[in-house]
Length: 581
Image (tube, rainbow, N blue to C red; front, side, top):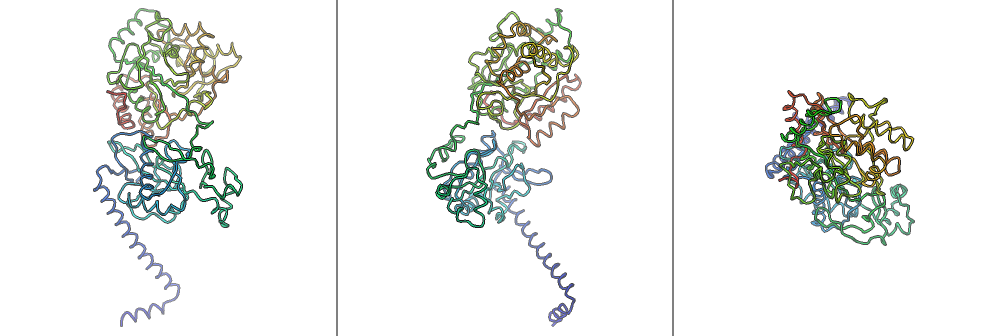
């Protein structure tokens, strides 16, 4: 009886109040439903962590992600890992696929017929329903908060209906640090049959108008059509479906021949890397250096240009080599130019690495020893067997994320030069200004005389693309200036900067180099902002190149700076490379 009275009383209430109470009851039901869903997700996530010891949590900006801890890492391996997860599911479901050329260095792209989308999603659910695999919309966000963890349950309908879906796992280092985010995921494109698009009166016309390749209807009718542009074609005619195999990290994947032919706009030039390295902590070298200082004749120049910090080793070379192995698998050979030294950790038996002594490359061995990077830079192109195009690294320069030869050279061989917005300034070389400024001004005078052009800009602290033929030409054309600099034991205001300023400006003026785009994070490791800049590097990994420069660290700060730098390098590059013992 009371329920009937309550029901009757409810009907007697004004309509506005009845509607308000209905909304409130619905909100209570929705909240309860959401609470039960959250409880189920929390339970699944606890089960995920309990069932796989390699799965760890990662918290970014208050949002928790789940990643897989790994024991080794390269960028190429990370993207291949996610490709393998997707292609294993495709094989599980018996679905044909093909590799598609992508636009990102971080990930692979797979093409699948749209009619197979439902079966692929079911296979992924079957294989990875209790794994830290994410599904997400494509985009540039590294860790989007709307990425969906497969272990959480069913994917949202709107995501399942996307024409391109990204799938990937987050990979973590030994201390739980982020190594690869979801930009390394594998993109799956759902390609449509051309005839189906021609017959689709509602959406087909818009899709066809947007195609980069405007194929005639007779060709479209027998083609596969991509959901978005790619670097080669968004229309695959039947006559172009010649199958091929592309090997990724040792695993063969099907594709179509024309999609991966060597392209006119892609550089695949063989590149070597040359490092200059010195261990300033070597007592024998330090004694020789001091003896030459004491012998007199040392040029007047600011103390920072010949101080201990300039020769201090923080083992940056070890981590720079790790960065090469992690982010630049295309490198052919590595040459380390030293003054009779050898890092104790270096594995000289590793394939593709060689120690080169100063005496093996200096045209005038009587100039030795030298403690001046400007002098050493005049001789690097003498290395026997060095490739025509190579990269000159200082040992405090590292790669921060994947690069290719295209970062440094156009496919026609023209160098991409790392011009800096910093300027040389006007006036004569001065002993109290930074030595690169004086060396750049001396280069300016040479080129003003030969080309009638006035140089203004310096160059960034990045890898320097070099053409061996340009260096040889400079050595003939400016023989006296280069010989003088090669004999300059310590930095002097009369030096020229051959490896950067002279090579780059001359290559530009002779049509063999053009300005490039270099995304660099420069850190003076003793400056007050160094800790903040290193933390940003660790968190965002948004720079192609990193320079960790020890300009002039005070003696009482050295241990603190060394510890901070070591912690950063070990976190960013936690795994030894093949170049280490």
